[in-house]
Each structure stands twice: as structure tokens, then as C-alpha cells.
Image (cartoon, rainbow, N blue to C red; front, side, top):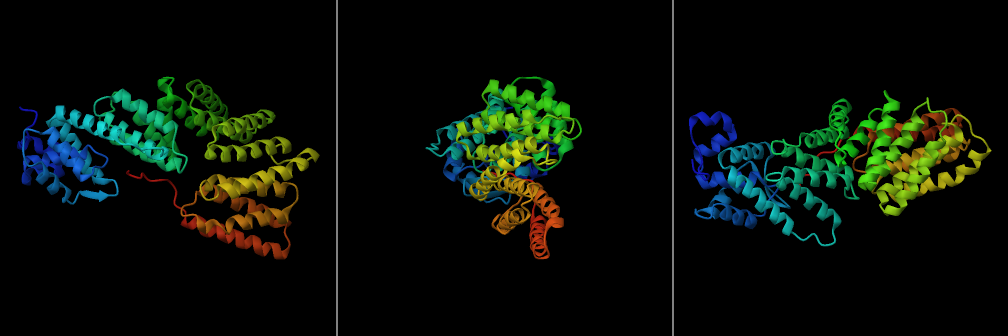
Length: 443
């Protein structure tokens, strides 16, 4: 059978699926080929679509007409980035394209990869990051190992703004190519794990990350998966969790994965503080100091805000033995730590709301610990009054703020109790409108 043919045998209809079968029964061969091509793209401008179609089937006619026809089908939509096919339809046509014409299937991915590589992102680092993600998507069609490498490197170095949402989009892209990345299944396992982690499906996430870790390959996926696997063990297997986090810090340093090295060390600080079997928190305090020094060298505001907050957490936990005693040294350090945390709240609120809320909670907790109950409540009041400014709020910081507000009540006057009730009501209202998880932004 010639590579360019479009089969129409009844024995193949079940393999095609209902969408492909329906199109093949009513559409011209070139229209089916147009659907094949569009299914392999994240998105395509119309002129690029027509050019690629004519390049793949140069010996045939009707390219412009076929492109126009397929763009009017209900499973194709236009976005700011061009046209794309709905997810379920794209998957069906990609599988059919590969089965019917593997040569051009691979060629289409090469042409799309070259098109993506030719785009000029200029000085826009975020645009370049998303471009690399799309390039890795296309590379999977003919170079699985290369695609896996780029997906991993890109994940390890996300955009400064909304890194979790960007990583969810990248994970979605990689998972769309599961059939093609079969030679490197641990890659898909990692991205499934990350999506489960963000959505709060921790059991599934842990299973996926453990699978990646067990493979034992010392690369970015191993360093990242070890970090997440350690995080997920802080509660039930703290010693193993800390071991994994130390391993992630070490491997990330060797691979020069700067962000993951810092974040894994940050996670180790919180793991040590949470583990009641660790009696001496001197290591946690020192690690938090080292991490802040390292973060400041990156000039990455996301890391810096986070490490400034964790520094205060580590120092206060050490000075007060996890809030159990407040001596002269702790009282002396408290004002500067609170000023630093309030500065993080002010600077990070509009771009790093989760970090800002954690900094606010830590600041309020320190003020409570030293007996400055009114100042603690005032800080909570200022922060919660700004919550309506944020479109989507993470649930965990809200829960911590609620707990801290409740812990103040027995120390407050009647008038202050009224304000505490108002703060609690705001937090409850925000919790009710909060949605958990982040969906993929198909760029």
C-alpha cells in the first residue's frame, strides 16, 4: 500500500474510532490528510497550515480547499495562537495518521519542529520557554530521547510567573505524546505524578514518583521525582522523606538544577521542623540561612520570596524549639523577622500569593508567640482584607491563617474578638470560593 493512501476498509473502522471513521466516510482524502496534520500540532496559523499541507503532499492538489474545510469542522477551534483540534479528536487522528502513513507522520513532526525553532522569541524568556515546550512536543514524533531531555530541562527551569500553571501545561503536552514516548516511559510517569500532585491526588503522585526514582537514572527526572517523593513522605515516613530530599539536593547540585536544589533544601528544612524526633533544629536553621544566600544569587524573585519566608521559619523554630518557649534571644530576633516577613507580604502579594500568605501567617505566629496579640490580629486583618483581590487562592495557606486566628481568641478583648470574628468570616468566605488544582493552558 502506498504511504500516501487513505484506507477505507470496513475491517479498519473499529480501529479508527467513531470520529475518524465518520470523517473518512464523508470527506475527500486531502481533507482527511488535513485533519491528520492539524492533529499533530499544538496550534497552527492558517497560512502555516496550508504551507505544511502542500509540503507534505506536494504531488497532489486541493491543499487550500482541504485546509479551509477542516477549519470549519466542529472539533476544530480558533485561538489567539491559531487553529487546533479538540483533545479527543486530535488523539484519534494522530493514531490514525501514524497507522496509515508513518513516513509522513514523522515528516510532519520534523516540519513542525523546524517551524517552531524558526520562531524568534526575542528577549521574552517566558515566550521562549513555551516555545521549547512545543518544540519538545514535535520532537517526540521522531526523536524520543531528545524530546524527553528537553521536557525535563524545561520543567526544571519554569517561567518566573505562574510556574505551577506553566508546568501543568508542559505536563499536559508530554502526556499527549504518551504513545510516542513509549521508549522512555518514566518520563510520562513523572508528568502523571506531577499532575496528580498539583491536583491533590497524593497517593497516585507518590506511586508515579516512586516509579521514576526506582529506575535509578541520575538525571533531571530523578532529581525532581526524588524531591516530590520526599515531600510526600514527610508525614508517614519522615526519615525516608529526609533521605530522599537530601539525595535530591545533592543530585540537583551535581546537575546544576539550581531551582530544584534550593527548593529541595527548603523542603528539607520544613521536613526537619515537622519531624518531632529531630530534637536539635540547628541544622534546619543553618540550611534555611544557606538557602537564602543561594537564592539571592539567582535574582529569581519566586525563590527569594520563598527562601526569605523559610529562613524566618527555620530561625524561629530553632530559637523557640517549635514555638514551645520564647527566651530573650527569640524576643530580640522577633522584630527583625516580622519586618522581613511583612516585607515579603507587601512585595509578593500580587505575584506569589501563596508565599505571601505563608509569610503573613508566620509573621502573625511570631507576634502571637511574643505576646503581641493585638499586632498579630492587625497583621491578619490587613492581609485578609486584600484576599478578594486574588482570583484563585490556594487552600492550605487559608487553613493556616484560620488556625492562627483561632489561636489568638483567648488572648483578645471583647472589641478585638469582634475583629477576629470578621477576619475568620473573610477566610471562610475565601475558602468557599477557592478551587484547588491548576488546569492546563493549551498554548
